[in-house]
Each structure stands twice: as structure tokens, then as C-alpha cells.
Length: 255
Ligand SMILES: [Ca+2]
Ligand SMILES: [Ca+2]
Ligand SMILES: [Ca+2]
Figure 1 (tube, rainbow, N blue to C red):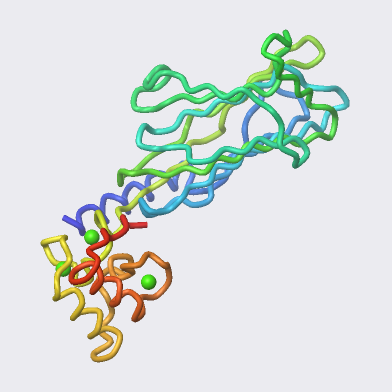
Figure 2 (spheres, rainbow, N blue to C red):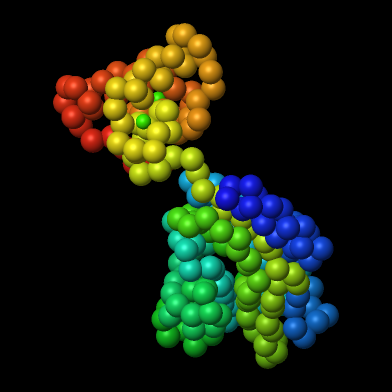
């Protein structure tokens, strides 16, 4: 099963590598001939479900005129969740209006998000004109709870300049794979036994790893019982003993 999944992932990467095995895509502006640079970047193409994906979008106005009415949109696969979002103009935070559209409104299986940066009518009170040489950045930190192969293909921006309206779209889809992390539920199942609930054999396994055989652990995150990060140590044994025999304070969820 694991082998099958790995093979499927391999084929998926291979296929998409023909299209775009990359973390970067330039956005195309319609109509063309405008000197506004738009970049779209993802932090990685292969992640664990415990990892955070970072999407960075940058717009640089290389024109001699200003841009108004800017809005940016993004379509994210349903299991993706935006944890934090930052909108900066010339590297300083600005006000904006954030909207989340209905699931599946634009693309089946995706949720649509909008960031209104400048309202040309001024009615919502969001006014951020993009002057010549200005740089606008949108940075999204995203988690994904479900393993799978995903594709980011639809992301747009739209703005006005000197009475003309412009629309942008990504030049190629970006492939992302989220693999399941080894940790399930809470930490503590050091020996990766079928029964998740920790017991004395997990303490024994941790002692064995740290002081006796040093045989590598099946899942470091499960062994990090106090979720301190890094390599497990004696404090993780202490934490397990505390959970099983002393205070019974529940163990933390997997990172
Ligand atoms: Ca567990
Ligand atoms: Ca166990
Ligand atoms: Ca630890």
C-alpha cells in the first residue's frame, strides 16, 4: 500500500514535471505589454501534513503610472487552511479586505479567497494605490490536514491603470504533495504499535533507544512525548511515566 502510494506520487511528480515541477510561476497579464511584474512562489512541492506551506505573491509596478482597484484571488484545494496571511506594501503592513467565497464556487474541490487591496469607489475605505516602483506582497501560511496530490492552478489579480483594466493568471499549474506524517493523534506511541494508546512498552522502547541498543526510532515525533521538538531525550521518558503512572496529564497532539 505504502509502496503503491509512493509509486503513484512518483508518477504524479513525473507527469507534472513535464508541466511545471517547480516552486515558481510568473503570472501573465492580459492585455499584454504592461510592465508590471507578478511572481507566484510556493515554499516546497513535497511536504508532510505537519508542515506549513508558504505561498508568496509579489507585484512590482515597473510602470510610470499608478495602479488602482487591485484585488487578488486564490483558489486553494479544500483541505488547505490559511493559518496566517500578510499583506504588505513596500514591506509595511496595510489594511485590506479579506473575503472567503463559497466552497466550489469557481472550481470544484477548491475554496476561493479574495484580497481587496484598493477599492476604486472608496466605499469600503480601503485605498492603497500602487504607485510606480511600489511592491506589494501577499504571503499565506497554509496547512493541509489530508495527505494527497494537489495542484494550484487558478490564482488571479486584477487592477486598473489609466482607464484600462487588467487581469492576470498563472502561466502553469504548480504541483504539491502532502504526505502523511508518521505521528497519529497524540504523541507517545514510541514503538509505533497498532494500539495508539501509549503503554509501558513505549517507555521501554525509549529507554532502549536512548541508553541501550540505539536502534533508530520508527517515528521521532511519536517519541517526542513532551513535544519539545528535536531529538527525544530523558524528559520524554519522564513525560510518559508522568502520563501513565503519576499525574495522567493528557499527552499533546502530534505537532
Ligand atoms: Ca500517537
Ligand atoms: Ca505503543
Ligand atoms: Ca522531547
